[in-house]
Length: 423
Image (cartoon, rainbow, N blue to C red; front, side):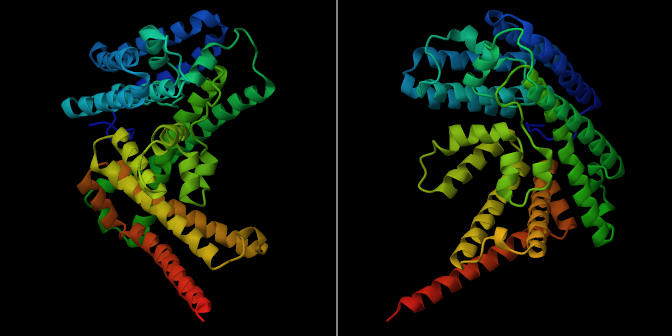
């Protein structure tokens, strides 16, 4: 398969490799801060490179090494003002060549994904003055191959990595940090149990079976929602473990997801802000704010396109992010219509209507996300359309009803305002 985070089709051996790396990261995170600050970045980079060679094989370790060397050459020989676009092109170009010319296994693809973000960011950091010029290729390799998050995220820019690697050795965790570690481990255990339990009852692979679409409509919709629900918990479990390791390593922003905020989100914007947080930060800092496009929606669409390409070459990723973009547009449209109609803020409503509105918003957000998430999970064009038809294409209706209603309200409000202004 040409790229992607989605675990569809992943083998049990690959799952075992990922599980071993995530569990071992806790012990490594506990021991690494005791290493002297002068040697810590080298130790973390050497460990990461060793893990890549062991988990992926020497052949697949050459791709990230080559990408790092191209980036180092761009930083060393190109004018500083060109570091951003050159490093971005080198990182994402290498990712494209890898996917078009080869089929990396799960672990090798995950490493290349994370490395792409790290190496794409250093050029803009250098051009902005946030990265010293005299770092050299060895220092860049230490950052690129730092073991923490190398197989799963989170992404962290150079400055955060340097802060974690340069922190004083032997400093014990503060009480708040210890609580964060235990809470992250607890979340990993809970989400792991939910994932395995619900996956046993409603395996996602059953959606592709021939007889599944012939089941009663209500049964299909409920099964689809539950199987997609457990699919997200797979990511919650691994990211929670990595968060605990990040706190142990003293990274400033170790969290990459908030399971509770994701599952209770009442708008697409809240989902985006709570899921894969570090990639959201990367897109906002290095793509959205730098795209020379005339409007904010155009820049948002450009950021979604980059995210889709980064995830993989499959059509499903582009369908998913197109759906997510449409969800955000509907959200903005509804907010604009409410403001134009001068509706009172929801916080001023009585308790019962406020609660009912919140429940309705949460249901709309998660049901629509689940529908378009099928494209992300199935990845193929025909496989996605097959699932969408089986669930009555309900996601398009969920977009059209509030979006059309909000557009009509805006038109009526504008027409009413024009009549009032007329002499």
